[in-house]
Length: 358
Image (cartoon, rainbow, N blue to C red; front, side, top):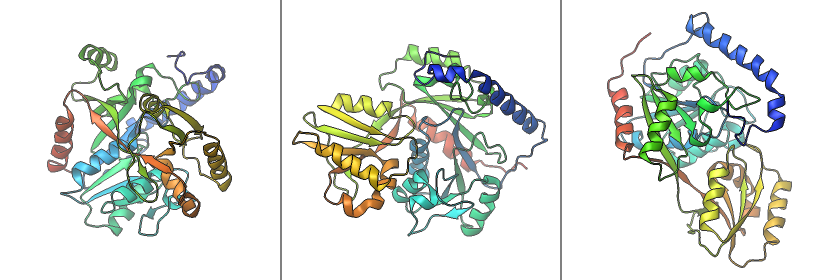
């Protein structure tokens, strides 16, 4: 247990008794699923689950987008998410007039970037999948976003992500740590991806992490880093490369902004920040604070920068944003050690050779 990790502050250590209770509940729940007391359902089509063992910040959204890029051109793909912090409940299918308040920020991001892909939300995946297939009967593969710990659906392929800076092997149960599932649950995964690595991660470092994770014989472990794209205007979509002379106001409500802040340290003159909690729903007062902070920056070459996930929650202020230099920075998964094709091959092979097992 890594009590020196930044997130394991003293207040969280004081909550250790609660984490023991939480861990006991998770342990019992998993044993009930293992013994088939609690039931898992399978479906007669390929289902790929992208998840993690910890709470937020491991890079699930970029991984889902990577899967969509390699699959959408040659098959009918659907993404099913919970739709965290949306203002609706139950099953919902994204359409032309859908907003982030209706389906959540990450599903809305997928919907805007991949308009040909079916995007749906539903808290109970085992109920939502039949509804999705009823609405979109030509669906050939479903990607479950953030569903690894929700064992009511048995995915055919499980991809589990763990942050290089906070490996699940060094973590502990909530609220003292970030684990929301047992460490041993990694054994249910088919693929493990160590995310947010340094781009220059060495082979010896890779070997050390593999020895720590101790993957099973059937599991494949990959390593990835974050690749940032050119920022684009939140409304006009034109691109603006970041420059060393630029001063940036970072506005963000994501689980782990640390990699982005490190990147801004490298590519800009300086940056300021307004940080909110993960999935924060922006208010008009938040926008006024943002404008005030931006106006107080004295530099001539300055912009406001936000993430794609935040942008779908900010774009509702279209009128106010028209005259502001608000730019959105995209991110993508970059596989290390030239293993992107090997990862893609596993995904496509699973779909091609899929056989239904009840």
